[in-house]
Image: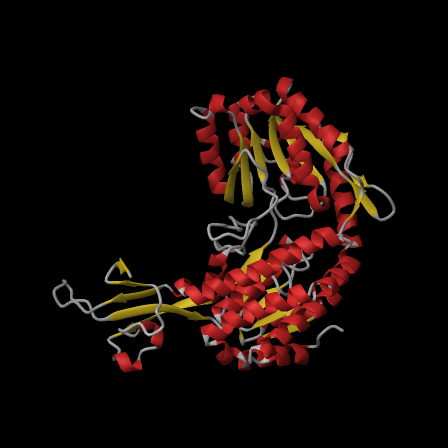
Amino acid sequence: MEATAEEVDGAVRAAHAARGALADRTVRAAYLRAAADLLTESGERVVEAADAETVLGPTRLAGELARTTAQLRAFADAVDAGEFLDVRIDHADDGRTPPWPDLRRYKIPLGVVAVYAASNFPLAFSVPGGDTASALAAGCPVVVKAHPAHPATSEVCASVLRRAAAQVGLPEDVLVLVHGFDAGVELVRHPLVAAAGFTGSVRGGRALFDAAAARPVPIPFHGELGSLNPVVVTEAAAAERAEQIGAGLAGSMTLGAGQFCTKPGFVLVPAGGDGDRLLKALTEGTSHTEAASMLDLRMREAFVAGVQERAALPDVETPVTAGAGGEHTVSAGYLTVPAARLTAEGPHDQLLEECFGPVTVVARYTSREEVTAVLSRLPGNLTATLHTAEADRDGDAAGLLDALVPLAGRVLVDGWPTGVAVAPAQHHGGPYPATTSTSTSVGITAVERWLRPVSYQSVPDALLPPELREDNPLGLPRRVDGRLV
């Protein structure tokens, strides 16, 4: 079932040949809507295949399918609106010093996009997911490298998307699916692949990122790799609602067996007193969480080993031990450590690395200085969260929020990071190693990853693309001479 180098080459060339068919934005929008409709019609078969391979459960997968189809329809609406083309026109102005020529700028698709499917979201971040939807919306054909954890689900979804293409008169090869580790490497190196989107591990993503950069013609590689998603609980917040925060943390870090990319994996909590109350609630919440299956055996083994290694460090305690919950399952838990252990480089730095699964690290701080010192040592993240109270919002809270902003692409106050709304203002990305670029993989602006700007200078109107002609035949939103019209 794994694709050979020749088969990968054939897949990319087929997608490349189909790129002209995606030029018509009306057809592109219709395709995305048809894909959403057919996925909905095939929902029972899609969910059944995904559950058999991931054991995520029909309820969770039905919700994920709804998110996936909503995402496709949202990108269809964005294609209709055309704002992402970012049309800008500056008319010639001889009165300027120096004079301006006539300049007209918009964005065009890059070409074939390679998409590497994620393991933990077999629909929303896989074959029909956000990377695919946004690339197709941009006008880019897609070659998807299926994740080995759900090959059958990938085939089912790819067949639906190809059928939707044929339904609206597009070549089926606007989307092609390949399988296999070697296929993934061949894909990122193929000279006709113009960009890549990846969701997965730091190790795998960095290897592909380096390969993309090492090509004779380097290409953009938009990778989501790993995230600790730190949380800071102020003393005032712990005093005000310790039990509520502890219970919320338990629910968030165990959601989906701790396999969400936005799982809060590191929490700074005040030592003693109200912090103890918070930990009591966290203990109760994690203790009552049922053992769950992880996505595959390899991930389960990595989780169990990672927890054991962290628990063996000096001054690390395990109020609720996470690890093997049964022959095929894992149990949730958490570790605690004095925050002072993390203020300088040392063996405890392992606690500042993501451990994929239902576990979190609670660092107990005794001063604001310890919090600041630990935050200064954290890597880049998708999210960062602050729990505060009315009593400190005119004091420490503002400074702590400012300290979190450089660490993440999404900053929350008094909430939990699990759950990523597919909204225009969403940003799902962050400083490395959370992502390899500054773009988002969720929300409408994800389409920008697959476009590049082109300016036309002093080009006669008859030779301009319709998007840039003076009479605006496509009715696009444009910025003309600095004014949005």
